[in-house]
Length: 148
Ligand code: DAT
Ligand code: MG
Image 1 (cartoon, helix red, strand yellow):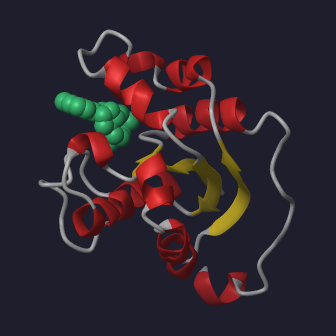
Image 2 (tube, protein in one colour):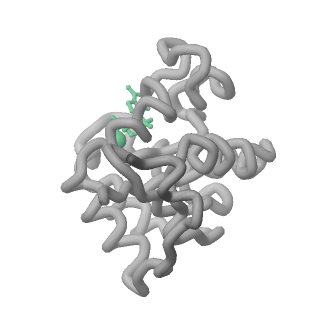
């Protein structure tokens, strides 16, 4: 099954949205495979967002990510990358649909609460970067009640 990297950004942690975010992925029928609350180094944040290093907002983005702890997670399930992006919502929270995390809980693009991998390949890279120690091994007993 597919895996995606989801991160609750420092604003999401500060605003008490950790449980809300986890709950949405959990209730959907995806499985938590790894999770940690961490303060990341500037160089690590730069590596995570390396593809955006030429953007004018890059410095501010890195500053934001290192401003407090983040919750890094790996979620697993059928089409979890694309569906995870739908649960997260559009990058600009003002354009994000109600019912999505960004649509429900954010206003500004630079305080958009959550990160989700945008492709299976990038998910693989992000999981390797954030969880070199590997993932938890488990199978939910609910599995046959969620998946055919
Ligand atoms: P996403 O997080 O939806 O995958 P992205 O990968 O294009 O979006 O950008 C990463 C983050 O950078 C995004 O969550 C918020 C910030 N960002 C993106 N575009 C921005 C912009 N035009 N101005 C300010 N911040 C921006
Ligand atoms: Mg992105």
